[in-house]
Length: 88
Image (cartoon, rainbow, N blue to C red; front, top):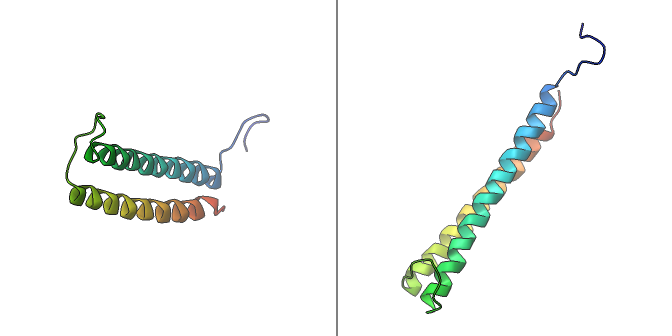
């Protein structure tokens, strides 16, 4: 028996915290890749920024990659959110 005033952490609380943390991490990944897409677009258009420029074809592939990574991360966020919301 736990002593009065002590706190017991349930597995549901741990799962919820882990799920929230992983969801946040995937959100950061999405933000980071889109930052690079926008920076590369400006550079390709001749707007001097810190990202290295490329051709429009390369930038288009970058956008496609960003969309795919975004979709994968969103799916992962949803799945992890569902896993984290299950309590037992």
